[in-house]
Image 1 (tube, rainbow, N blue to C red):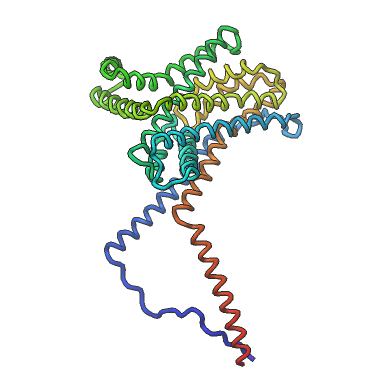
Image 2 (cartoon, rainbow, N blue to C red):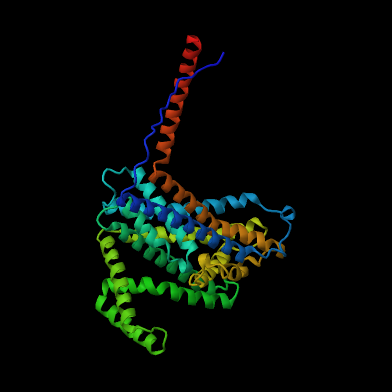
Length: 403
């Protein structure tokens, strides 16, 4: 006996209506967006792959991992240092948003922390895949605006965060290189020299911005003279365009600082959190080296790492690839076995570079899911499926009974 199930879903035989010009335009726009998204993802993958290969493609001298004696319990402090660093940076954005009353209307503290967390992780991700770390800030500003941060603070908060980061590192760098040089804690005079050069390059912009905040006319005159000199030695081609661009950037940053300075003690708090952020990241090589058996002093490792970090910051490659592994070899060469260097540097780069990338990818995935309401839509589909399945079973039983 055949079992005839009733038709649950009736399909319409009507033909599809032709798309209107507006609908066709919208459809093309969606297709273009999807193509650009795919290309963007492929570009990200290519950059990350290139960085990894340029750093660790040559592993012929590496010891067999099974033969290495690693004190794994010392990896835990390195992980904790990264966690404290990330939390310090997220706290900066969160505190600035709270103090400036720029949180989205009706947003809870939990939601504001989530916005701050995602803003930081997006910034670190795009900083690490763009040359000279210039890509993070625009994405941060866009995301904060998109999240509903009010009254222009979506631009002010990332700008101030970047300036305090640079100043925080500059302070730590000066302390480390001066004291390290005086007490011969830094392992090489060459490292001290390139460290000073790096600090000068990294400290120039935040110091100019601070000067422009309190001495705007004097700063503009000095900038004009500097650009004029660079134009004469043919480093800058269009003097007027360069002058206007420099003035515009400095005014934008200094106006952001003035807004934050209105809140008593806020800028100082941000500076302390920035110093905590860099201090934690700069301690990671010490724990990694100790885990691989190196016998080194904490400050000697910290000072040398700070000097080398300053030296590679202005290298215009994604994640300082091609320079980081070369310059940091002077730090990791203290290991008792040369074959350990590859694995120690790989672990260090995981904490200070690749972990940011993984967290950034995860964050972008979560943002995409939230934007598309994929979780809600999936739950709705599951509910509909369950209802349909129950309905089908009931219909089948009824059909069997009637037959």
